[in-house]
Length: 133
Image (tube, rainbow, N blue to C red; front, top):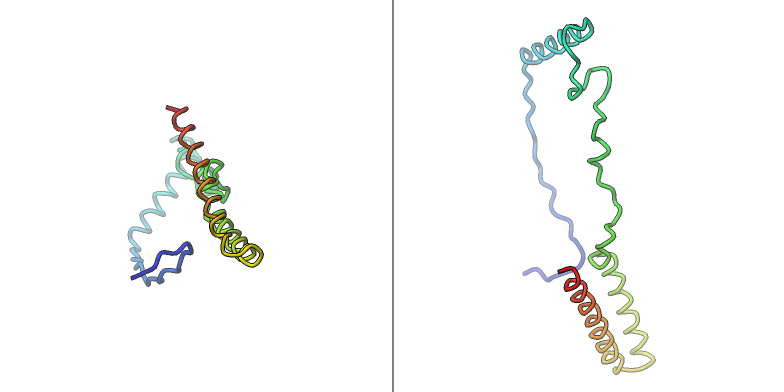
């Protein structure tokens, strides 16, 4: 049975080979069609498609809008795993130093502090959801 953890473990890499089939007839037809279409566009007999990229220029439309940046979302501060790890680390360091300087009562104090902070957080969250409704 796997124990719950806050760290992600690496999964196994799977081998998958995607076979590529070479069809010379199909490739020749596509080449000829593209060449004829380009010749007709140059002569002005057909209009250039703005949706299909021409062989001379790459298709740039929408390529920047599909990029997902690494910027965190502004409303997801408490969902960040980095913040959670930092708080856990600080809690462990504070409990270690508190145990050395105060004694075992530090765990009681930290429990009260965690319950108070959690209560204030959920109260603010409840009031915010009630305000939006």
